Amino acid sequence: AVAHEIRTPLTRMRFGLEMLDSVDDPGERAGLQQGLEADIQRLERLAANSVTYARIGRMVGIERGDVPLRALFADLADIFAPPAPLRLRFDHAGIECVQANREALELALRNLITNALRHARSSIRVSVAAE
Image (tube, rainbow, N blue to C red; front, side, top):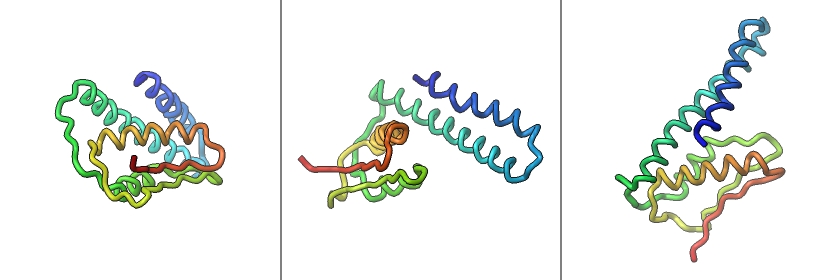
């Protein structure tokens, strides 16, 4: 899975670098550079997530604690900016905190949101409910 996830940004980065050499327009050049930066950030997140997956797989050092949902959702909203007209909404239903490992919970939500962004047509809603 990691190898598959790495190939896409690497391919885009190679293409972007090739294009940079042939582009004279400053606006187009800036767009290519932004795309390269986005791919670098994606690879950095992938590397961090891979370490988290490995830790979870070994169950070493995984601690649970209070995870404030507003802060978690705010962080996720900063990470994901879906293209218009797609909307990403978070609803914590008045639940302030959950007992979890924040790193693992954020990783799971990032994966869900990333998949939802690939397939959603109008909106994505991440919500919490007490049962």
